[in-house]
Length: 143
Image (cartoon, rainbow, N blue to C red; front, side, top):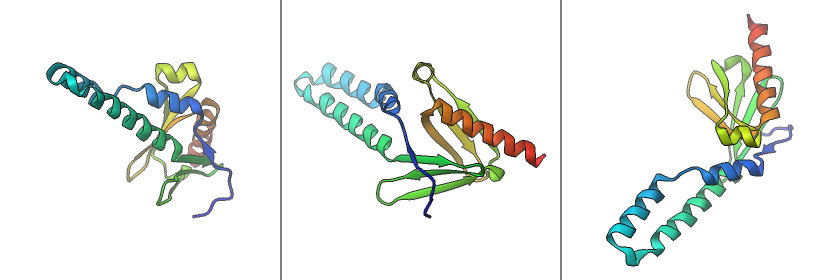
């Protein structure tokens, strides 16, 4: 599906938030390597760089836009996958913010429809509020 709307990318703040999230795989690896086999000290460093790289790729693949009737969410890695969610078909839409998201003025939007739950992570706060406002307007118009 082609869209004529401008696709927004996540801000660099989102990458920072993704990078500082704890990784339990890394924690367990560090514990077991340094407790049982300390001469393999390079393995946790390699795993750290792999985790950062994977999180960077997940940051780069997300693009989104919203209109007065739809939210368009796109993953841009091969193959390109586009999801169009109409405000009229959304069962529930809400915004959440963690401590770091509040400090960096970003928010996550959770969209629940008949089929599944879609999370748009770390959107700029202005966009998240605008999406929430558009959803509320459409819901009030339906009632």
